[in-house]
Length: 345
Image (cartoon, rainbow, N blue to C red; front, side, top):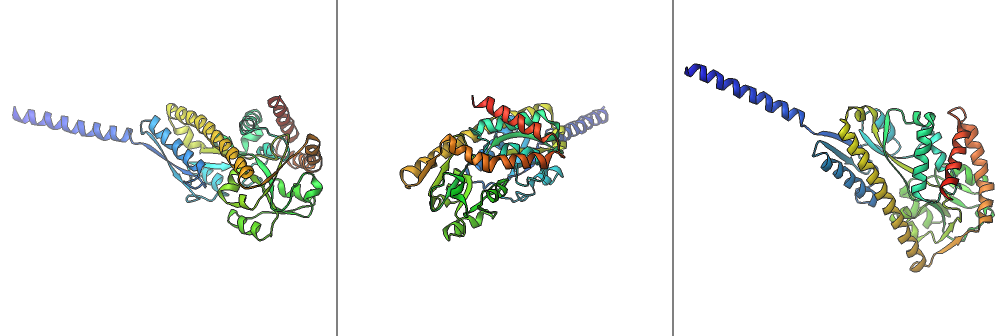
């Protein structure tokens, strides 16, 4: 009798141990690595951390995202490939970091389109992405889980006000994206250099200005040197898009409820980034005007048109010609313009 009781007890213990091991295995959290080249102390870096914390909280600890800041997992120029190949599960990526990889997606970053806001730029990029399979193919192997534009770019100069294209001739300007070709067409000298060289180059007069957004001029302290700002009446001179991308296989393996949590957190992240960046831009502009004595040249519509005619149109034509082999570039451009017109009414 005792022997039978002992064997029954032992069986219960073994079954319980197996069940406990199984449960521990099934509730083991999914841990994902995210490559983020932003510093953890930056405003956007802090939002990204709150985004990761939100996902962990809403998933009950089932999904955890570890952010690798300041290029500690992959360089900014390598993060897309790193995510496609599984070195990273997620990444923060700015469209145009390497424009040759996603040339059709560069359409919303073309100069002088007149994007009126970060929200509009974000909406238009996602609309053309959803409409054109050729753009979707540029992001093979990854899924876009969040999108938000960067703050809008403006022209900033060290020594003089710039209003018309003739004013920029002979100047050397730090730039990226399509801007090197634009500036060459306008008779200026484009300069591409790492962020760590900006301040010294501007301070020593090696370069005369930069095309970038106000928040980065503030965080890098080059705002102290860039005392003249050109503001276009039709909106920004250009605007870049940032995306959070997830390895497609990793996405497909997530349970649907976790996918939904990631999608909802992405909406929150986009709105929070746009709100933060717009507030930061307004604060910096006000500071430059009121306490730093900077000058702001607000252009008239007819002055805008000079820049569009000489700096924009040739780039649009070149972009379409260069990308026809990649997809219906002309239709993509025309749809972008249509959506833009629709959104600024």
